Image (cartoon, rainbow, N blue to C red; front, side, top):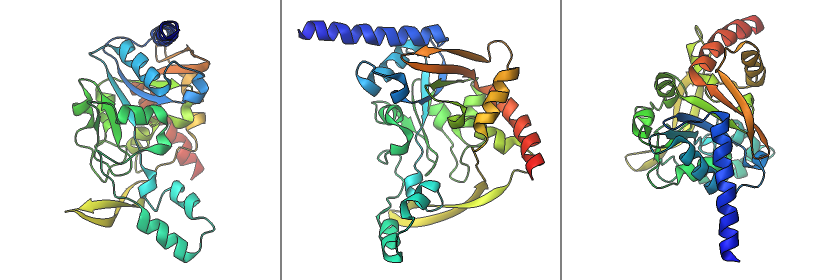
Length: 274
């Protein structure tokens, strides 16, 4: 019975890998992955099975990257505002006191989903240094892609997104839509004169927990779904490939082309809105 069960798990894992290959994932790819495992439906061995399928699809020379963001350690994030809504002052103080400083080797990223956490905790994975918008990666290019993530640059030129752009990476949307397409944020930084705002989060400085405030581009993903739809309407051949993995509609997107389009689209549309 166990042998039959193992054979079934192996067969389903192979089908997932085959679906990724049919979508266009190739050995040696650098992939920025966003995944909704619920959308995929039952997958052999859950998030670990999906990660295994991805690693087989890109091969030993390929590199996988996932967002491992931590809005839980910031009091300027929507996550924090939702958490303290309707709490009295004493309860808010207790929440703030309980917020842990960012540690790239230990801090979980629960809001990023099961696959992101599985990548982050996998043997050999690396993680970038930003205390709120870090990325985790597995593969031979991981260290280069994650290096130099400046603490006052969420998703701009001194972040892994810019390194992914240089590497001609692709975006894999596994059961997710463009609303979660983090790469579009790089287009925000490349707009002329993007608006800026203050951010604050908990960090450790010389072993001491403290709050740190800094200024960066005001990130806004509220129009990313519309941006993605516009991109698909004009995308050149090969810029977007679509297919199914499990039960989910999925996309494989050229990151450079998506970011270049986003820069122009956001510049035009957000200027009109002001």
